[in-house]
Image (cartoon, rainbow, N blue to C red; front, side, top):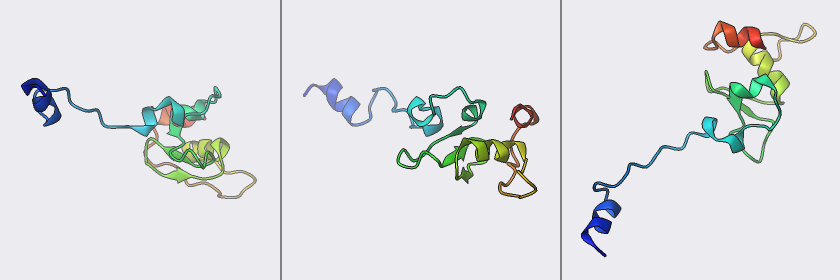
Length: 96
């Protein structure tokens, strides 16, 4: 091993490793054009129906439709089946 290889292996002058951010990973997003996927991602590849909000970090179960209700603060048929995101910007909320 050369001195340069040892330095980079020991954390010397080599490039910094990037932190993995699942919200930016295209594999964690659905391939649909649904606008809800701009603000959420599936953090568990085995459970695609669980979506994590990029604003508040809440896990929303039961798919993209309920996740969009989480962003918009809307409920269906008078039932409160989704908790409104407290950190969502007004523009994103209206888009849902």
